[in-house]
Length: 191
Image (cartoon, rainbow, N blue to C red; front, side, top):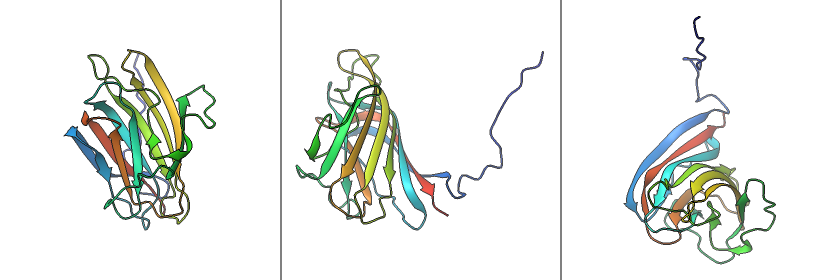
């Protein structure tokens, strides 16, 4: 009996409208933050950031993000800059984990572990319409092990609370450095 193998079309053009196109990737090695400024409204309507085993240097810290409207020269860090919510996939997240007084958007709900067998955060963050002078929405879906050995799948959402073009994203842990892992940025092609 011959097994059938299903594979993608070798001629698939991911640069066609609606497809995802690779923009950049960073391999982390004890970095304070990972920052991305490859936003281009002429090419992309939205973006996806894919995390592969982004491990904290400090055990039990929250994986977070902030936005920039000046190409990464500075990032918004004020108490009322973001509205955010995070929780378990089956958890009612309305208002959970923050509200309108946040100075960052949470990607993880619990503190991420860094002991043996705790492999950091893996998953995705989507950024919607950052090129519009409106509130930019962000949505996350990640998996990780907390510092107590509990496995999590966490979904989250956030919004920048001022109308502005977003052209920079910073990922970081609430304490200590990003120890290791990879973050890759893709753009959703607009035409």
